[in-house]
Image 1 (cartoon, rainbow, N blue to C red):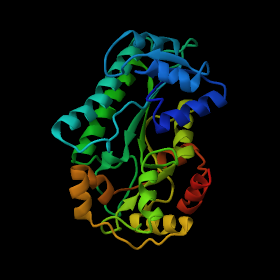
Image 2: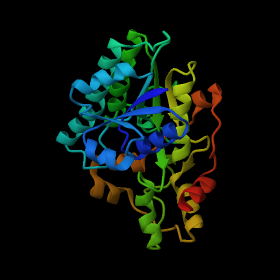
Image 3: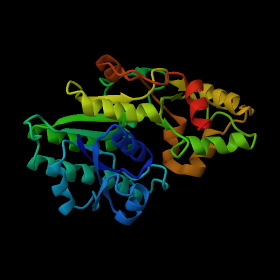
Image 4: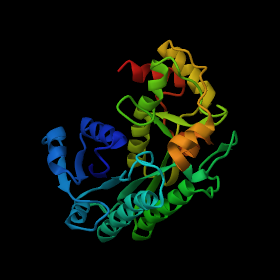
Amino acid sequence: MRVFVTGGTGLIGAALVKKLRARGDTVLLLTRRPDHAKQIWGDQVSVVAGDPVQAGPWMDAIAECDAVVNLAGEGIFNHRWWTRFKQVLRDSRIKSTANVVAALAKAPRRADGSSKVLVNGSAIGYYGPHGDEEVTEDAPPGADFLAQLCIDWEKAAQAAEAHGARVVLVRTGVVLAKEGGALPQMLTPFKMFVGGPVGSGRQVMSWIHIDDEVGIILFALDNAQLTGAANATARNPVTNKEFSKTLGRVLHRPSFMKMPGFMMRVLLGEVADVVTKGQRAVPRKALTAGYTFKFTDSDAALRDILAR
């Protein structure tokens, strides 16, 4: 399979490219820093220079591919959510997705006549805060900024269906990985013996091991019956307090020092809601379609990651 990847130098994208190459797929990697990408990958991938937010010649390369995995998007924790940065968050997701769809519209079929597939990034922030209520892919969207961002992001991707492409929207939870994401930031206070829950600790954390995040994306590429939204979260979400206890146990560190919710708000601003509120999102779509998780227990997931 020839797969066009945006966001391929990020945490999830880089792990995905490794797995695609390991199983023999051809990868075309879109990047704004082609020299840097070539230093990392050498001749293992075909580097395509371009900015996904800007329409350009890079779009022609999609015609050569069987599938697109679109993971482009500015990190939500990169800055405080000032008005200007919120626009950056939107543009980096919605404009890039619109350009990918425009490229797919020109060649939505593979050489054998079957539909191409667009696996597009999204997030469980789509649902908004839900307390302890279990949410599946059928749950309605929330009303906060992150929910509206996901709604518009997914709408941009779903436009590819009108051109004949199959679309899968991967709503990702908290990805656990040693190389980046939330976990390295969580580790710091624990290593300093001041780790513990954030806010009330009752907010639910819908986590997923990086291997299963990539596994679900590959599963979406390969299974023609899978369409629409699919939660990329482990089968067993936990509260922030439970996760903190597990992390402390794995690290052999205490886990009783609370970080007050108001302090997170002072430090991070509006984005603190992502940490102090949560959703119990479960991966019903992936399980029903037959995906088998490698990690369903947070203790085993953390032990595996920290041993790497």
